[in-house]
Image 1 (cartoon, one colour):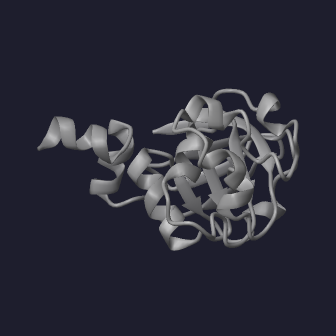
Image 2 (tube, one colour):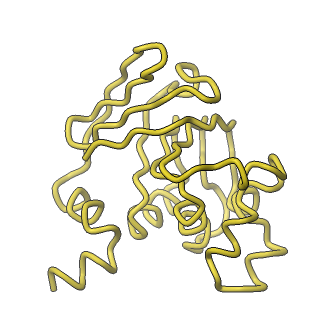
Image 3 (cartoon, one colour):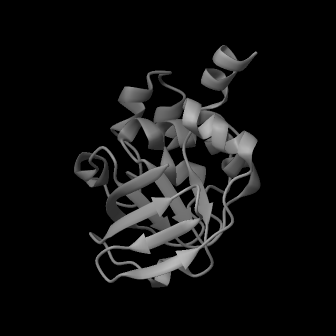
Length: 163
């Protein structure tokens, strides 16, 4: 699986309330509506700038906070195709896998990208490349089961076809 997209660079400790503010998350279960407010507290205009296929590059501890699947679902609904970060909160990482949002840990990846660069991720070979600067980094590919969940589009989709 190859993912290619424009990069949005975010910082360290992006918590789930920054991803989708609580004032919206409990008003509706409509993820299309919630996606209009993704990262609103970081940049009120960011949701309107994200295009389908874009990629987030972030620092440490991305997704800390709530254990709800709202955060990765809203990010995916907004059009983000993958997140590459220095590290993730464990519960966010697992929730992202469950909803079919690729999340990849690469130490110091945030130092190799600038806003607007183009990233290429090869999930099977374990490569992240900044196609603007041609800097390439490696990561451990997903185990087969998780790769199959990703290819299916998430755990629910995987279960429908495999169980």
